Image (cartoon, rainbow, N blue to C red; front, side):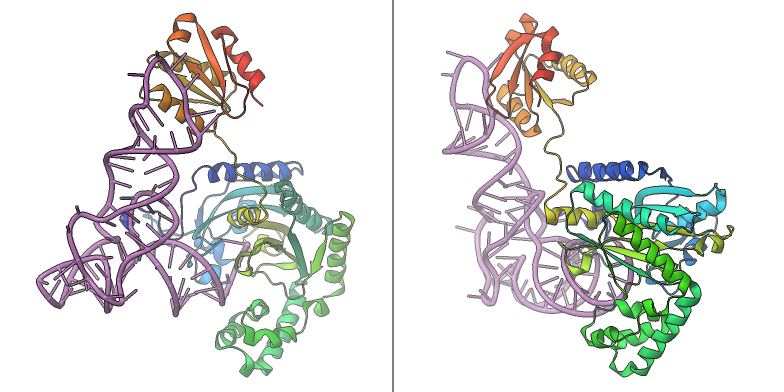
Length: 419
RNA sequence: GUGGCCGUAGCUCAGCCCGGUUAGAGCACCUGGUUGUGGUCCAGGAAGUCGGGGGUUCAAAUCCCCUCGGUCACCCCA
């Protein structure tokens, strides 16, 4: 075991092949799904002025306890992004693109917390943000994109929870009602939850502590505190989802971890995972965030999906498997390797993936390497082929045997024999 | 931030409780098994600061303390 200096820092890790291949494919699938809806990629910086993230709310742990903050050499107070919505909205406020502005992103975020399964200090998310329209159909589009993405991966056991936190006034009234409810029964709450009550009463609805369960179950419901306007919006969102055939469960106690959400909120839960990491994605409306960052008042809605947890869910459902091989063809050359240089280049230029053996090893060793590479075919160049201007193509996966062909016919032979 | 469990070859682990000759196994890796051919089999080989530091002891992988790391749960969140 190496010195801990030369290990990836706590809460981080290296993604090696084949996981890295699967990782990249996931992002490609995501880009394809949201690209089909006209979403454009945005690549924000990985750090921002710390105030950008403070806009997310000081009462959230993500901001108050988990941010990687630092001063740069110019004395600027910066923070690694704990999520990307804030950066995207900041970019919106900075560039003032015409609305609707529909964008997607993929990349790492950073939160200083204890690592565990499905939770890392550097973790990747893919997501979309749509700014401009207040239209409930946009909420439904955004939700549907995530849903279609999961479908494309092959996930079957994802459920969608939705809720509405109402307009700002509704939300305030609800928080008051919640505070009254819990304060009246504060003795029954766990000590930690009493603390939460003082700082962020909404969060109590998320408590997993058994001693809080009864009180949480008896708590007033947001759904009863919605204004007509917010209720109508929520109804239309659900109506559109229903029309799209996307099943959702209204979850009156669904509150999201970031304070900027208003009105529609939603979460995707992987039924195949344990509760500690089953929230594989979530999002909602944040209609006040843009103006908080200096833009004209602009509604917005979006989601972020955790790449790691989504892949955990894929593992649990045994879908979206990693590729079996990195190459199609493996070149074996026992007459010095000069031919291998040319043949691999030719095969690669023909659009096939090719690797070869090194260090002029024995045929046995090279064939072993060919087998291990996962390639479907080996191209063998020995003494006979060298002098005869031929190459032998051998099937490594089935029982199709081998044949020796003219070098000029090699590519065509490979193409014919590859699956 | 709190708590449980764990840390011996690249990987999975045995050995630790009852300190004592050159620290083992399987998988993976390398070389062979004569006349160019992998996937099975056989033989051999290479590979370990026993996470790190300190302590107890004639002697520590083994006992004690600290520390770092991993893992799981809580918290929180993706």
